[in-house]
Length: 381
Image 1 (cartoon, rainbow, N blue to C red):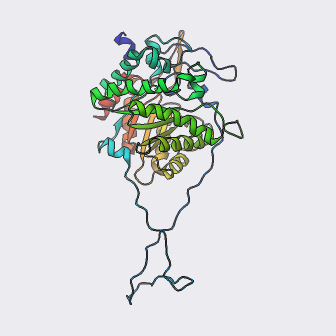
Image 2 (cartoon, rainbow, N blue to C red):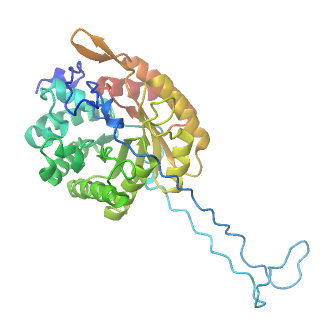
């Protein structure tokens, strides 16, 4: 494929493929195809609160000691027994990444594939089967730009999303091939591979008919194939609903308990997700759930992402890592196509500000290209 197609071109206009209730934004999602429509299928967040356990200090020593209270006596005259203090596990992602911060992630995938000839209306995941060289070239461009983590071309790799294009029966093949393609490039450059899980696009009861167990099963079959392909971590991204995040986390833990888990949400509605989740709420909930990194992706551009990032930093506790992957601005109509209005220099300056407030992993989302990531790398060097 032509090199110019990989180094950043103009996303083509997308036509509507999902019915009148959904609007399509060309060059949209995290992989660069459907930013507007992906949020329409969500359920209300499950408000599960973490239960705090008082671990106490254990038993007092016998014998008199000044200024110390002896342990309380139980009903049977025995010392009060409390739950043992449980050691917090080491952050697995931090162990993989080492100490250098911030870590540079990659950017959008869909626009690169469109520039390389992906037909209007076709899912990018199709090229994991039919044009793997183009997918490999996109990963290679990000590797050469300086990304330390490559994201598999599987944002729409759950069964409901693939069924829309007649690919549900090839789910394992689509996801396994995607992971193997990214793995081949990562091994050449000494990088990590993140197995990408996007929203299912389905609604859970009571807004829909899918149960939490159904959602977990959908994510689990995708994770299984990605693990077979050789991923290093699981990335769940562009979510609006904490309940859907819980299902994805449970699936990742069941299938690949040793892999780090990263969850990012899209706060694109007045600095909330479409389901009303605030950045601080997401950090608190997902950190309590034991994920290794929490963050934000997509959204409405660098300026708003910086507000979101500041809220996440304020809410952070413990050793959880924070992630920010902004769109390259907002799409603007230019002739017969859309262009995102943040230049590589704009995204580079944005990344410097994110690093200054304590964000650990920085990358790009919709509309970003290897040129943007190369500029960020230069700014953070």
